[in-house]
Image 1 (cartoon, rainbow, N blue to C red):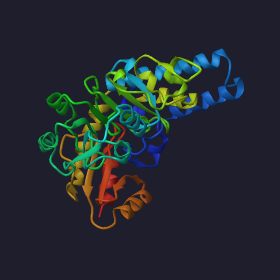
Image 2 (spheres, one colour):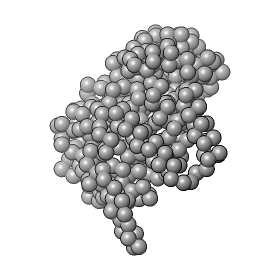
Image 3 (spheres, rainbow, N blue to C red):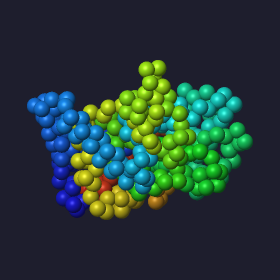
Image 4 (cartoon, rainbow, N blue to C red):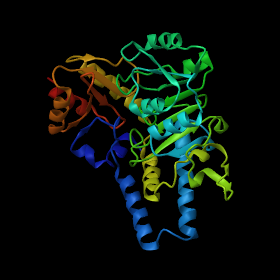
Length: 359
């Protein structure tokens, strides 16, 4: 499927310049059709019997395989979660960190990661890299590593600035366990998580899937304890509740994902066209170029697919006014920045429509 052909499957593009996949991606007709078809099946045939359960379990594994391919890891290394936040909580709970341990993160993280860090007994160290040029971030991060550091936890792409963080370099240079928040990378750009210990991501953003779905890639499942087991975590259990964990990352599956949601995500993953990453990068570069003529751009060149920039006045009011003009973006409230999400579906017209409405 070409980019132009795939774009026609998204009715929202007929009305809006949709530039906020960093929050929620657009939904395609095949995604909704698949969800409706599964709901209709459940309505008419029922949600019981061998055929229903074998079909639902098979759908789980098909989606798992596609998500594994999206992050470059084996199927056995992927857990089906509900969100990036869910994945981060699974890791922080399962590591068994103590009060004397330290976790190094940055000052540009989302609460989806920060909340999990705060719930852990470990001490949190912040590396101030949010507004630094990307090439300076590595040295600052390395300078915050101490003998008590037990985990590095940071985003692949900062949700605020849109800049990439040096996750691969950190892993190579420190050898420390690494948890990556991949909410703004998976589906937006090529990802290879094979050397990353824990890679959490969402499916409703750049993968354009239904709400309430995510993934967690775990390089070594035995490195985490299952502290919130679901029925799908076990291969067998005793009357006491003691259980044998399933092989690989399946033991961390959060629970029974509704088959209509799985069907929708399965279809969404098939809708993504060839050349999508190159196109998204091209559109982000074009957006940065045009916005720079009217505002101070925070995002460095050649990063991910987010473009953030400073605006004067109330950024929230500007977001509302842009929406009234058919342009969907978001702001970063504490900083007074606007953030634009450029996907493979973004066109020159979308960006020009945005820029024309900026003060």
